[in-house]
Image (cartoon, rainbow, N blue to C red):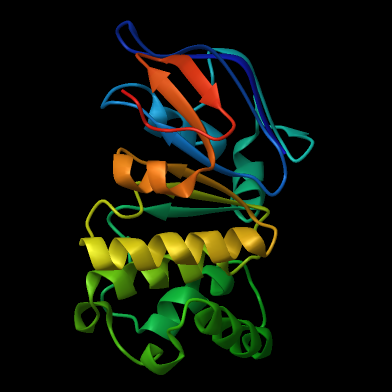
Length: 226
C-alpha cells in the first residue's frame, strides 16, 4: 500500500529531515509514527501528499510511484489519501454539511450525488444532528470529527492523521481514537503521526519510531519508548 524506499529529504540549507528511510505499510494496517519534534514525522506526511518531493529514494502508494509526480496529478493523489490535521482547517462561514460537501464540489461531483454522500459520512462520524451548525458552534472534538468526515468524503484508501488529538482534552481524544479505529475496521489504512505516548501505548498496534530523520524502531506491536 505505502512504500518508502531509502527516502532522504533535505531542507535548505542542509537540514536532513529524513535519512534513507524505508517504511512499508500494508493495506488495512493501523500504524503510529512517533518521535520527538524534528524527528521527521511531519515530513513523511508532506511527502505522502506530494507537498514536497524526496531528494533521494522512491515513494509508492497503491502501486503508484509518486516520486516525481506531476503537478496536475496531485489532486488525483489527494483524493486517494484523506488527511486530518491538528488544527482542523475548517471553513468558518460554512456549516458542517457545507464543509464536508466542499471537498466534493471542487471535484465537480453533481449536487444530487453530494446530497447522498455527505449524510452517509456524517453518520459515520456521529454528526448527523450537527449538519447545520457552524464550526464555532462545535466543541473541539466535534470539529475534528468534521475534519475526519471531510477526509473520508472521497472514500480514500489511506487516512493520514497528523497529530489529530493535539488540541483536544482527554475525553475527546479517546473519542477520536475510537473513531479512527472504527474507520480502520472498515478497511481503510490509517497512519497516525503523534507524540502522545498514552494513545500509542494503549493501541497495541504497529509503531514506527523516528529519531533525527532515521527509522530508529519498527515494532509490530509497539510502544512509544523515546
